[in-house]
Amino acid sequence: MNTLSLIIAGIFFILLNVYFIVLPLSKKRPVLIKNAGLALYALCIFSIAAFVSNIFVIIASFIFATVLYMSQMWFIFGVSKEEIAATLKKSATLTHSNMREASGDYLINNDSIKIRIICFNKKTEFIIFKELHFSKKTDLFKEIVRKFIQNYLMK
Image (cartoon, rainbow, N blue to C red; front, side, top):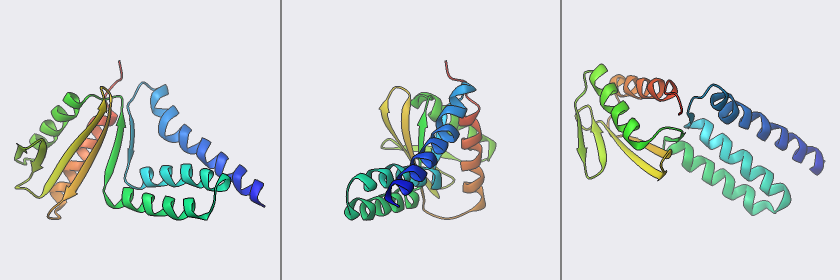
């Protein structure tokens, strides 16, 4: 039973890699894994490790996946920080929102959403969206940002 579960988790991991990484890269698009997808990806990685390890890895993986899901974090590979900043400005203009930069973070729509960009290297970033006040305009803003990022071509 344990080997069957490991095989199923391995197949699921391969399918996630194809969907999230191979498919966008084959079209020369950036990799964007956001919200539930990022939590699911982390859960899959830790579940494979749990089959080799013990029950504490499973518990830690569920906690880690929950934190990733609750933080509304996006993983982006293939787009630079400058391009993301330009995307945020374009998206704010399209949604008629005001945008200001405060200590490295971006505040959009009268401080209803706070955006932090964490840069690992030249083309790998995490974007954290923290909604301070819910509005339909902030959801529209995030959707436009997602569309802009997915439409960039990698060089």
